[in-house]
Length: 328
Image 1 (cartoon, one colour):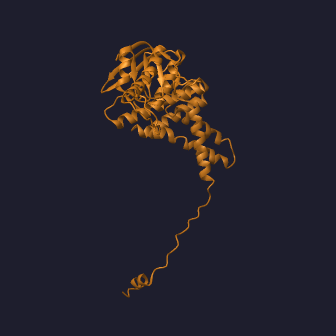
Image 2 (image 1 turned 180 degrees about the horizontal axis):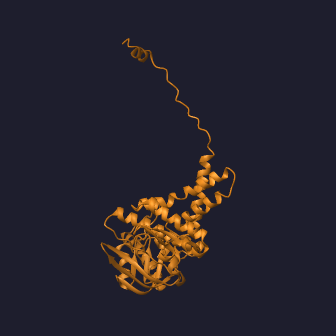
């Protein structure tokens, strides 16, 4: 069987290509032993006809969710086509979507006969079997219907691969959120420091008890840059103080408004212009984080009382009471 097919026409089948067998519960009375051999031959011919219909439509790569037995593999080898068995259904759906193929659940048509149309085939420039490390992979290159990409992760053990997968998933989700909202903000605690300074200045303009609530909210925002610095083994007090000073200057002095992009550089342990450095976050994620954290705090503050019920004491037996009194 070929391991590389160029100008591939792909058929996605959601059933097995194995020798057809009669359904359970069907009894056939055979008087002549020669008829038994004819029945076996017909079962083999049914599978051959199915494969010939798929290959006759122009397919040179056949992906199957079920199995392909040795009898059927012979027909693929003779036709110079590639047959791949036991594909995951989820993978097959993605391949069908990318190549323009149709997932075929059965070859039966409305007339009650079996057929396979060439319009059900997907197309790709190349399908090849490639060895990467210890695994054999089927690689489909440049599908025709829409662009699709796969990321192959390699690591020392399963734990490292799981962590890499989580990190990659987070990174892809960040890009997805940016494309959805089309707005970004500087990272490294820049947004939290700027909001903290702004709310502190706003709180001093109020003459009611709301001033205390706003001041505490402004102070709580500094938890983010402090935590970032501590996790990077940096001096959080020094870095947060510098960060606040820069953002205070940017809000007071309009000529130095460019300092609003200042955030933390956790590798060098200093502050920098995170807009130039390319450290950005999706705006929609930042807004949702602030909203959810505020709602959680409000929910906790609404709980103004707690009632604790002590468990009921069970009546002790006469023997236990005597033990306590020291009579036994």
